[in-house]
Length: 288
Ligand SMILES: Nc1ncnc2c1ncn2[C@@H]1O[C@H](COP(=O)(O)OP(=O)(O)O)[C@@H](O)[C@H]1O
Ligand SMILES: [Mg+2]
Image 1: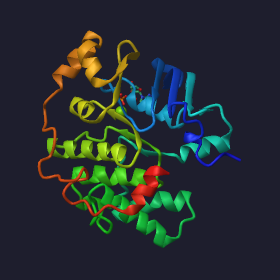
Image 2: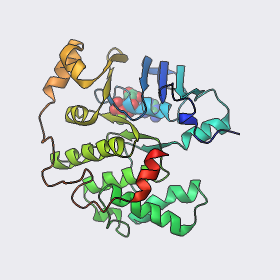
Image 3: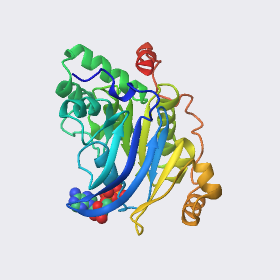
C-alpha cells in the first residue's frame, strides 16, 4: 500500500525532477531532452511561444501522456514507471487548471467545485459544500457558490477554476495560462493569488505562461522552451535570466516588462477586496 504523502516521503529530494524528458504526439517530437526540477514551495513558470509545447509538457507531467524518452519523478517515485496504485496516489496530490479549463456551464459554481470531491472522495455533502465555500473565499469569491459560471467575469471564472483545482488540497498546483485573456488589474490580482498560495499556504505551483509580468511578479524560477530548437534554452531565476540568460531569452524578458501595475491598489489581501476572513483550516492544510 502506498504511504500517505508520496510527495513528501523524502524531504531531501526536490518535489518534481524531470530528467531527459522528450514529449510529443504520436511519436512526433515537440520538445526533447528537458531536465529541470521544482523545489517544495516554489513557483516555476514554463515560458515559450504559442505552439512550442508548454501544454504538451504539462500533459506529460500529470500523466495524461507517456514520455517518448526520459523520466518524471515526484520525490523518489518515477511517475511513468511506478505501479498504478502509486501513480494514482501521486495524482491525488496535484491539482490542475487546464488551459481550456472552463467551468461546466450547466452547473453552479459551487457544484463545479464539489464535482471532484464527489468523484474522488467519500466526504459527505455538508463537508463538500464547506470545502467548496472555503476555497471560493480563498480565491476572493465568497459569494460565488450559488452563481452560474456565466454570471462571473473572466477574471472571476479563472479564480473559480483555481478554486476547483484546490478542492482536494493538492500540494502541487498545475496552472496552464492562468492569466491569459485577463485585463491588467485582473492579471495582477491572479499573480497575487498565486503568491498567496505559495507564501501563506505552502503550495508549490507550476504555471504555464507567456505573460512576462507574471514571471517577474511570482515566479521563483523560469523554464524557457524554444519552438525552433525544440528544447529548453534556459532555466534559472527571472533576475538571473534577465541579466545573463541567452540573448533571445533576455530580449523576450526585457520586451514584456512593465506592461501592468505591480500591485492592484485596492486589493488589501492577495485574493482581492472581496476575500473573506481567513479560515483556520488553511493553517492546518498549509502545514499538512
Ligand atoms: N492532441 C494533439 N495531437 C497532435 N498534436 C498536438 C496535440 N496537441 C498539441 N499538438 C501539437 O503540439 C505542438 C505543441 O502544442 P501545445 O503543447 O499546445 O503548445 P503550447 O501550449 O506551447 O501553445 C503544436 O504543434 C500542436 O499543434
Ligand atoms: Mg498551451
